[in-house]
Amino acid sequence: QAKHKGKSAYHRFTPDLNQQSRERLKLETQLRKAIEQDELLLYYQPIVETANGQLVGAEALIRWDNPLLGLVAPDKFIPLAEETGLITSIGEWVLHTACRDVKKWHEDTGLKLTIAVNVSPRQFRDVKFIDTVMKALEVNDLAGEYLELEITERLLLDDSIETFEILHKLDAMGVKLSVDDFGTGYSALSYLKSYPFDSLKIDRSFVKDVNTEAEDAALVTAIITMAHSLGLKVIGEGVEDVAQMQFLRAKGCDYAQGYYYNRPVAESDFCNWISENRRAYAT
Ligand code: C2E
Ligand code: MG
Ligand code: MG
Ligand code: MG
Image (cartoon, rainbow, N blue to C red; front, side):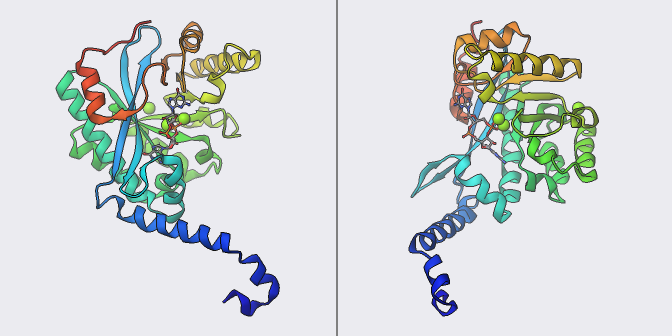
């Protein structure tokens, strides 16, 4: 077809591009079947209280186990799911599965763990989003306080009345709200006083060099101080070694998450790990 549009159009339509879009289409077709074919799963990564090493909850991190592609990381398919709108049904599946699993942990262990679930912008703005959250809580008989929704600053950029209303409705349901990847979204900080957030997750790019780069140390310290004076809790992301953990603890960062404690693991491994009585980490 392109060749009828003349030479330049023909040349722009390179085989590479063609192949790229065909691969995208293939991925999209496979992703559409992922839910019904039971290929999606949630990995769980512990969230720990820095002061005493106590396990307080977990973040649900989606994986796609495709027979042809193997275990696909979210960065490889969540953007496509966003673009195509598939994120609405994927997100619904995530919410239901995460609520079901945390309810089970409550019953099996007696620990009142919180489950953190990532919400992407298109999913958040879907007209049925609030109902979906409500349903996931109801069906699993889970109180809102045990569900924490993670939202990036990117979502807050538009500063719309809808965003404001959705966040306040979720807050009224008792659901916890946190800002994910805090510090990377080029967002004005003023939203922190009008939106009902409970916590900030400091992006791992700041945590990484906290013991070697004075600027990163200053930023992390300032974020913790600011968050606390606004009544927000702080979670350090991407904690990989004991020195980073100790820095965060010394600065009063409430919670931490990262490979230092545990990598994200499948639900059964997460359960085994809790029941092996490793409910607290050495501090
Ligand atoms: P995120 O929400 O910021 O999640 C943290 C990411 O950092 C996870 O990557 C986690 O495996 C990784 N991580 C945790 N600790 C460490 C560490 O110590 N070092 C390093 N280098 N990395 C660490 P993952 O699982 O690949 O997820 C990537 C992103 O995909 C997430 O970033 C989140 O934005 C998105 N995502 C994951 N699951 C879902 C989901 O169910 N729905 C939506 N909408 N997005 C999701
Ligand atoms: Mg997250
Ligand atoms: Mg609240
Ligand atoms: Mg993050």
